[in-house]
Image (cartoon, rainbow over all chains, first blue to last red; front, side, top):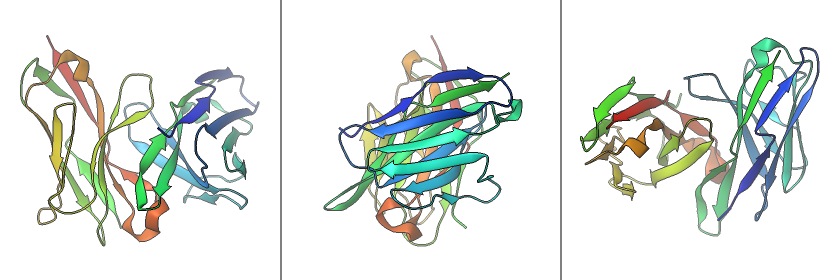
Length: 118
Length: 115
């Protein structure tokens, strides 16, 4: 089935550095990718929607300059957390909608990235 | 706006007990409804879905029926196992956004099954 590969699964970085998270669609073309953030024991909050070849759409309250999203190809979307701080520590998950000839038939999720900023 | 509300957890059950996790939604139009499961340290896996009223989604012994009249999509399982311990998320797809609409999640319900 359709798989999104997300890397890295875990990353620890120093405060002030930047971290890039990649999501690749392995056997389908992902024209859209959703990026979620999940705090401990909480739900997934949509951060932004990336579309191949155009600017990402950010949800209200999400800093565009801090969370840079690039969707340069139909198989790769990246999220870069710039100048990371401890409060950015979280679980980040990407998701791609699956669309066939009959319309939408679901979503596939990456396995998530646990970011810890020290 | 569109939203999903789940019963608060944690839900603690003994093995072989009956499980119900309530989920209600608010949406304009006709969303698709989903249940996702998240095991510790992992991403989300689709458990089941329903795309129209009165549809019943089922998988691995879990079931949920799309009830438009009560705007509900409660998750049930007749006999839970320890391996079912996880966090369960109810979600709907934004009906106004077409085929590639974003998912809106409930807050998640933690299920703990004790042997």
